[in-house]
Image 1: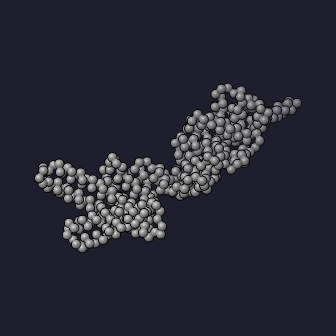
Image 2 (image 1 turned 30 degrees about the vertical axis):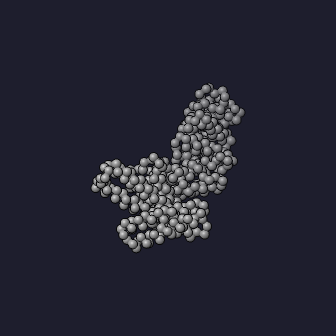
Image 3 (image 1 turned 90 degrees about the horizontal axis):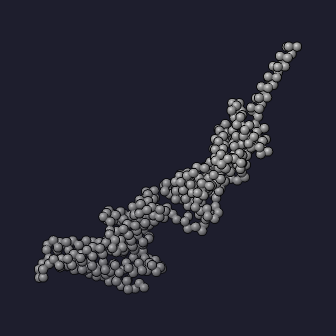
Length: 450
């Protein structure tokens, strides 16, 4: 009889042990409490069992904790401020779950568990959006990054019926951009662009990527997103701009623009548009508006510009524009020397007594300026003649081309008249005859162009 009592006692202990083990590892009774909205009781039971090593040895414990803690955080009865702590612990629990159950995350789709990541998504989205509304860009970005990660998982598990969580990714990209995380902003904008997200007002996605890739020197990316932008927003002029437009438009200041254009030419040496932009920029700097001062490195810039002029003429020898710019530069240069020469002559008269002779130094400077003027004036001749030949070969001229043609003819007439004067001074009869005929030819042409 005593033996039987002992046997029953041992059986009772064994049964109790299995019951305790079953309770320790039973996740269903807690998730059942969630289903009937007994959130407080579910949390109390969970917190007790989270101290049991066997209970927390499976991923179920952590996705269940995610579900319970997010449910309690949502509960309006939770104390002020407690929701943030609960959300933080739910995030940590979900991270631990993913570590234990990845990469398939099987439990995410199961009833009783899937509410956890769904609630976590909603709570984090709300938190991120509040920070967004307050323009707390860094906080908002760091929160929305987590929301995107969860939404990607929910999409992959087909809990969210979409291919991309567009609004969330836009907010993540936008807050990344505004918190100066440009590389991460490009990643999220790229995610949207690769999904061809369009719609009114969303062209900024492609604008950002075009500029970002251009500034990074990634011309393949630049062209890719420019093409996507053009495809989705065909009416936008923005996506019709080329790399030269972006080089001169995005860079700041003269030196910045020159460097950006030179960077384009380093990869595309024959880019005619880039060469013309450099020529125009330097020309505007060498020949500033009235009252402005030319830069100290004018000679260095002129060498750079003439190099670009030569290259442009080789790249596209059928365009008169480069030769017009070339001739204009030397005409402007000659005009400056002529002004300097006229001022020197005036000063020389003031320094010279009536009936006296100018000093040797003044005469030498005058002669040097005369020579400098003649050289600059003559350097305009060849490019102007080439421009004139191209304009003469056209069957029909625009109004602007006619104006340029008339200007060129006028200057060429003046240049040959000046050369005739120099030939007369040198008593070179053959040159006088030749230059007289050339001057007449161009002056007659000038009169015929209406």
